[in-house]
Length: 388
Ligand SMILES: Cc1ncc(COP(=O)(O)O)c(C=O)c1O
Image (cartoon, rainbow, N blue to C red):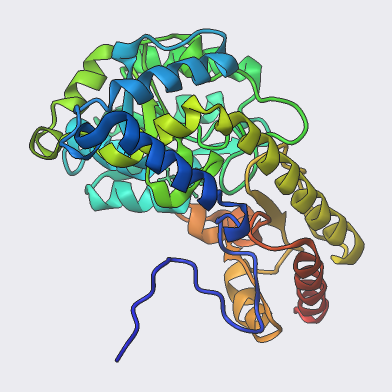
């Protein structure tokens, strides 16, 4: 009988695989979640297993608002906060509620490739906006808006990962933030601020969110328990103006099925009430910092001349620029034959990747133990040494 997989992750024997932006299973707190599940059922009984409030259970909204206040200095008002099924479900829901096929959406470039897939699912027209070491470039945003206006079109959404971006690991500079928000406000754009890596900083905390520049203004801030706790929970949140929260919570899907992840939301509320989340995030930061530093050290030691990269201050990824003329997509087959894998840079572009995109690849450092990372980089270096 064929055996269907339980998880997305599938590791191939003999390959050190830097392509997965996944946590190590050993870092997922199964025992504590089991305890919180028991506590949630003891506390709420059948209410934990009923259809949930569309906005999410109040007991989690309150815990979460207090937790978010620690990063931002102020808790979001409870009519501006909603529980989601993670960033992926939130993006899908926002597209359902706010867009029609053929609408234009501006996307940071390069951007999280699987968010781009969600926008494609909704038939949206993707318009790239270039980002550099300082994140999204306000000048490129102005050009993209002018280009659309020239074609007689208008975008209503801008998707950006302003902190420790996937794939490039860059953070939107504090001095660019007011400009981005003001441009969005003027252009009638809603900014989808995908802030999944905000809490996973390894050197210094990131700047306050784009949302905090103009609370309840043109920004929807998306967060997730996937990166700070466990992706299998499929639980996250959004912070937005009350009318956006009302439109999402009033969608047909939630009206029919109740709030997403209702029982899981009770488990996470119990977990947070025990004060465990902060300790867990500290543990993750220490583990990922060690893995990031091991990867960077191996890259410095083994990779040949012509390779370059930025040191990501947090998140899951290092964006490697390959020597001129080396195409990441073309390199992949040779790399896998030599026992190492990655995601080629071109995958993260909504349009043509250009040289910068093609001559790059994304390396994730969260899944693999330090020794394997070192071995993987040694193999990659050997392949590059033989690359044309
Ligand atoms: C930028 C970004 N957004 C969203 C996600 C997925 O988030 P979630 O698990 O909450 O759906 C990821 C996961 O890799 C990501 O890197």
